[in-house]
Amino acid sequence: MQNLGSDEENRNFVSDESQHDTQDLGHFALHHGAVKSVDGWNIFVRGLSANTGEGDLLDAFSEFGPVQHVKLNRDRRTGAASYAIVEFNSHREAQDAINRLHGNILLGRRIEVHWAFVKPTASAAEFFTGGAAFCG
Image 1 (cartoon, rainbow, N blue to C red):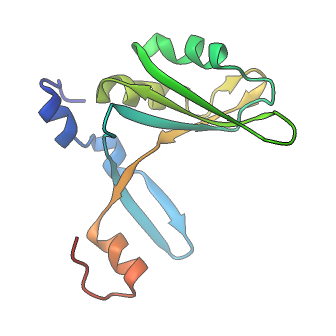
Image 2: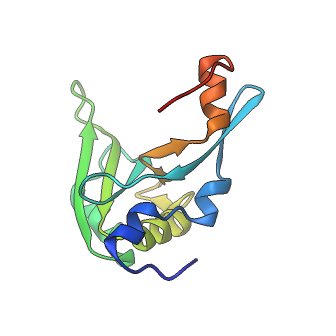
C-alpha cells in the first residue's frame, strides 16, 4: 500500500487491492475502485447481528483509525440491524478495516465489509449500456 499524503492525493488514490476486487454479474465481472464521498471514505458493512449497536461498530472499527461517522440502518418493522456505513477520514484507515474485518465474526455473525462507493471501469459501462458509447 502506498503512503498517502494530501487530501487531493487521497481523493485520487485507488488502491491496488480495490482495483482487483470483482463483483460477479453472471458471465461478466466488474472491476472497480474506491471513490471518496464528500466527507470521507465510506465502507459498507452487512451481515450484522440483529442486536448490533453503533457502539459495537465503533469498538470494532476504531482499531483502524478515528471513525468519523457510523450510520446503522435498522429494519423498520423489527428494529433489527441490517447494515451500516462507517466513515473514515483516510483511505488507508478504511482499506485496513476492509482488509482486516471482512469475513470476521462480530457478535456471532460473519460480516462482509466493502467499499460503499465505487467507480466502475469503462468495461462495466459497456456492460450496462449494451456496448454503446459511454460519455460521463
